[in-house]
Image (tube, rainbow, N blue to C red):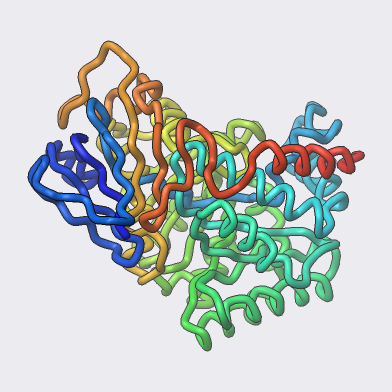
Length: 420
């Protein structure tokens, strides 16, 4: 059985070539079959979608999502004004973390997955964290995304904010999960990880040949505390332990990295995930990508923003921080996740992951204008279909594999238990 997309205009996300072809999408194949319009005759079991006047493009990927915190704005403390990043973390995020249990983590993950699907995201690289609910949490989060139809890379952010024993449980949960699932090891941040914890994670990475997702110098507090405790900068610790030698490793944020650390990153195959909306929300100084144009991806953090929104935000932010900014560089960060996933042989982001959208604006879309309109006029993406692994998972703004009304009712009930 195949999904046949007829009469649409296909956009090659890598070359920006526009092609008018009918497309046969197969659930069993990662590749697409292109045929001349009206030459394919549907067979019994085929699903045909008329895409006249619509555009077809590879769906989006999110390089850094924290689904366990997607309901954080429900908390009263979330609107509390804080003067520093550390106060934001300790007085807001860590208080919300203490509210999380099995049901809240699942509800938060389900909410993230539904919003992602509605926005055209079919792959998410997830950082999970909860000091009170650790065992089997990665499988639980993955199951929420699976239910919606979204592929993931899961990781658990080991953190010693509540002691080494809790962090060790997180590492063990992470290591057990990647025995049977694709995923990454995780570290919350350098200043929250002792030498013993870092070595434990690094050793597992070498043994299992996996990468790490780690929050690297999101704020200067990471650098100050790391230097105080370990006489090293944050990224230098990862560099010395070989964590950055893996092409699957992702350094998240890097807003407060030093010039020396830029050289460490530049000369290693590790990737960087930039999260402009989350950084802006926390009042963190903007990311500067000077000397780091390669291997930069975009993530949403826990803001539930769409990836085009993240792209737009990142571009305008870069105008005040980077010595050289361009629309092309911004777009390359949007699509870089596809290169990352392919390079590291992760499954779930094949060519049969697509969005079908209308351009509900007066602006023409073509190879020369597409990027500009993503940045300046996100409304060009009126998404009608979201296809993941050859299957329609969202239609006209609503997911198809879950009952959204029942799901949101359940999520709302769980959100009431966030009492901080």
